[in-house]
Image 1 (spheres, rainbow, N blue to C red):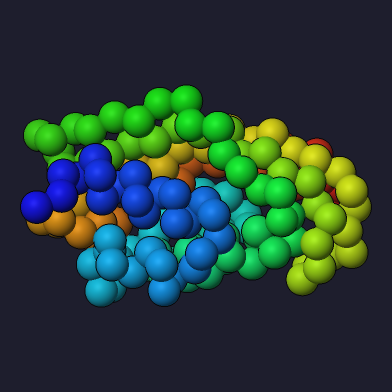
Image 2 (tube, rainbow, N blue to C red; image 1 turned 30 degrees about the vertical axis):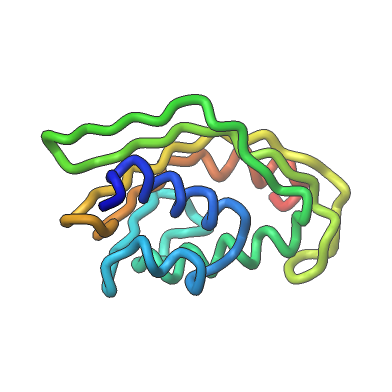
Length: 137
């Protein structure tokens, strides 16, 4: 039996690599929900929708990567929290025309577990900062 930390890390790696729902699904409850108080993600309400959004983002920024700064397990509340910095340059197609600009954007994932599956994830992210750095706003 894998630990919640192992499951969360495998999900985090797959999601951040832009592998989409197919790669992330084994770590998530079937109807896992998602929440983020950031404009680009305001309408995304499922973890499947978010992982697919990340897949599209990585297509626009093929050098996208993260620098994991903190990873913590809260067994009492069934949560795993990851804090990282997303680093990427907009050189790929699939959205606005490539700007060639880069971002280093802080974010936090709080993954809530129901048993061995992520049932909800909240992303905390200052999207305005990232969009400005990338020349999208």
